[in-house]
Image 1 (cartoon, rainbow, N blue to C red):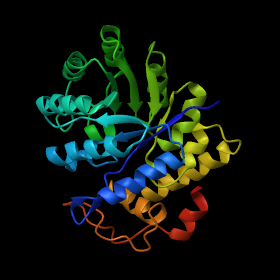
Image 2: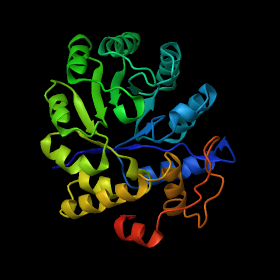
Image 3: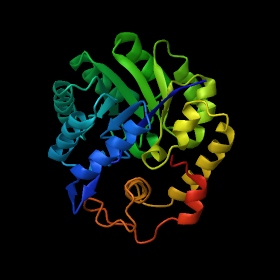
Image 4: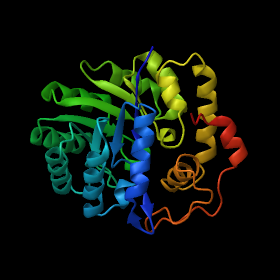
Length: 284
């Protein structure tokens, strides 16, 4: 059974500035390997550390150079007003899919989360995808909230769920007309078997493991175990720094990556064991 694999892409930097040449290399990597889509401006892309202008510039550059690959624009800002503004920018640029994580930092009720998404869904005719990531936002979107939103808005096209709770994931899968994507790499294979539309998986920034799983490789069980080991290796490092480093090292081919993050992030002082990673990652 085949499913879609969307890259929740990094935001490449060099010397604290957006790096256009690295972005072009990243987009070529995505096209060459035939990923199903790119999600720009998400958590792996460090969206919360971007200025409004950097966020906008990233969306502009990605759509200028994407050449046919399906695009998903992360539009969330800490303010609903700015989120709607970013959504308008993305829509005007030509993005057919907008993605919003539930409001973060404050302890929002489900009623407030509903109002947040209701405002976004009312503002745009294009597809909108909700993004559930309680580990980062601090609040979980409940299946009943998504069901209520879907009942009143046909343009709620789907959900990326990074809650790591398969019981709730199955509840999301029951919502009629909703495409549900798994955000946790280690749960991708089980999720596809349960009926997920596919995955939006962080390791796709630097290896092809989850792409192979999504496309039904006969080695999927083995690759899934390898992917779990990759996740175990990288989760102890600062994010999104680790993802940028691994892209620079294994996709861009930089022997000793330097100055690849934006402030206040910094280059990794210690890096994952290269020999072990190469044993686990599929690179071609």
